[in-house]
Image (cartoon, rainbow, N blue to C red; front, side):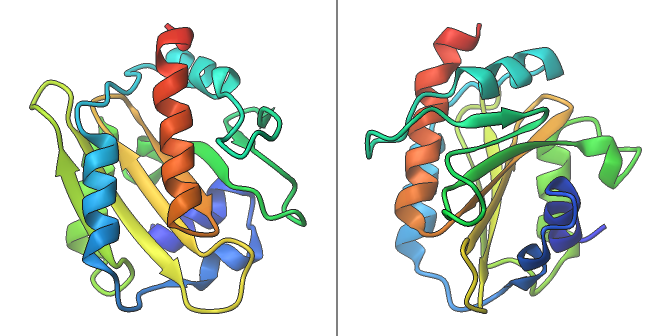
Length: 180
């Protein structure tokens, strides 16, 4: 299953997810993501991850808390274009994967040309691996970010720009203590 199919499947076939293709990528975005994920301790179980989604605060623009729909949440309807975050079972992509990092690493090596940047940051105990794609067509959400660590799930964020991506990551950081 490709990165694009994974994102489309997560959002029940959200049509624009298939527009996530590679284009030139600014190294500053990669550095920003490495900094944002540094020493982040993601949940390692499904219940903790689902609780994290329910605990997410409003984004920095002062809007409302996200609406949670099972294993995904969004800060606005698809028409409003707010960012979306969801959970993906790594076994859905391949039964041999046991962690979110496995899925991200496989996407990094197997899907040449369908992502624009990837990385892994943090200590061995608390590392986060990530991969990002950018839509080249005019769609509401331009960035697709998949990230994970030691848990059996990966997180997916769809956002309109780097600011929204980083804002969602800050919301995750704020929710982690409350989710535990």
